[in-house]
Length: 365
Image 1: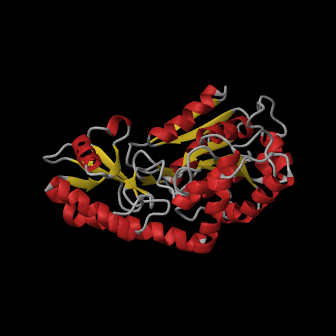
Image 2: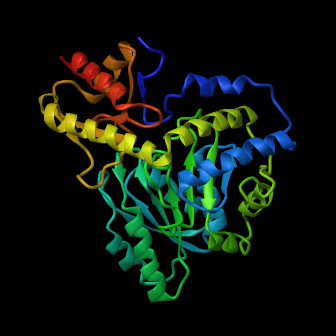
């Protein structure tokens, strides 16, 4: 049995041995030319992942850190928050926690948002930002982010107000094509431990020119996540504060792998794993009471949430697999007792997913 290919948690994801081994290099000074060289080499790969010509900032934090940064640097007074699961709710709550007014457009867990409804809510006026989660990890739902962004632009034209689109791409960037620039997204963030297949501890974000212009007018940006400071330091390919140097080594190694595979090929590999997982649930899952939690057309290519209504309870399925050396995700929050989640992202392949599906069939009988 190999030492890779049995860990299918929807984050953190499994990490290549050579990426882990890259972290044992000696620590270097973070203000020296060597660190600037390393980050400069990562820069074009990060821009390709985010599909942007803008800088992609590297932060030593979880993705939630840059989620808060997007609020502090991008929301002037009031946001419309799109909620359909645990992490989109976190984004919404951060708006209020940072002292901004927030209105919620919420749909049931397992559903995606309707861009036309986004437009209708925004056209009433008074909003200067929208928060959205592209791939909701708790439910396996992929929101129509490009359509949402287009609806925001329509609302801008109708109201004459500038409305920024702040997007959580935590389980989409690196596993799906996310067109930060072409879709008109003003801030997109992700974390290292999801589809980028790195150890936890780094976050990445890219901001539009108008996001940066607004940030420059806002007080209360704080210090650690002040995007104006990030931008100044990134001109030298450095970070404002001491970065997690060993994780930067891992990033550099993984960027070489991502560049060799290609972002388009990486996205197609994720789509192939997703299609195989969905087909398996639809073709073979009924005998165990399995069903796809997200509807057709709204399914994430990186994580599949499976409804469980059969003889073996969802937590028991997770436990049985763990006893055999396999790791998948249990249901999240209110879905804990009735769903399981398979994270088919990062550096996994269809063949490794096939082995997991066979293992699930074996433990269920």
